[in-house]
Length: 327
Image (cartoon, rainbow, N blue to C red):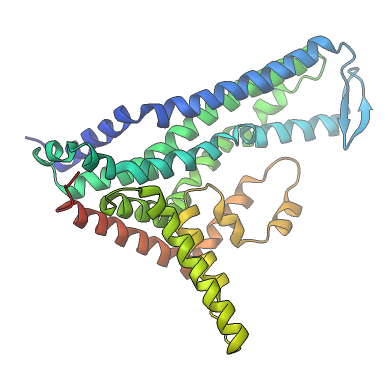
């Protein structure tokens, strides 16, 4: 006897099996390139330059005869808190993967008529659609985070060993720094925030994927942009002839941007004072400060309204899938 939970696990495994190239091999390939480029480049620089120098703000401060203790502590703190930043390109791959996965998630089942097979199995439309939403909102980010942490640790080990060979031994100071162990925790702590900000985009794409008969990309991306263009045109005419503004900027930022760009990690930083945040960062990245600033965006009602709209659109996708089974 199957339970709803076991059915959901099976459905998520199906999604991972069918899209393992997007969820695993794509970020793994990017991570491998990063390790080869940065790790290999660093090792080459060490081998090719016997007189290795350390520079701060473009000015040479020492050769490899020893670092001042203050400089050593500052470098160790920066390495311990910021080593995950090197894999930032992975988090540019994630939104692309999630966006196109959601856009095709329900449409492909109708296009190849496999929806008839899946509907013959003892699983509900709600379970099927929710499994795709969970895969996009939770499984894909977790896979990217895991690969990113592994690649970052490899690069950090290369950097620490290379520095030790040249007389700049940061291994002990980095391992003694609590930020080295907390950095992955900080990164994972952004996941609930990412889910909330991604809900409008995931909901919209699943809704379009369950409804569109063809040209899903044009409907998913073109419809919001055309609506924005039409509103901007009417705003221009109203402002020119009637002196009335329709607040197109609000529509673009609160509707179109949330619907199309919500799956981009860090999009919430557009709601905070980036210049002030950068000034508060000391040596390396301040994880608690970034988390606190990020979660402060949840105090704005727009985030919750957009998340609720995303849930409503996922519900709409479930309802549409109950009868939208044509090819």
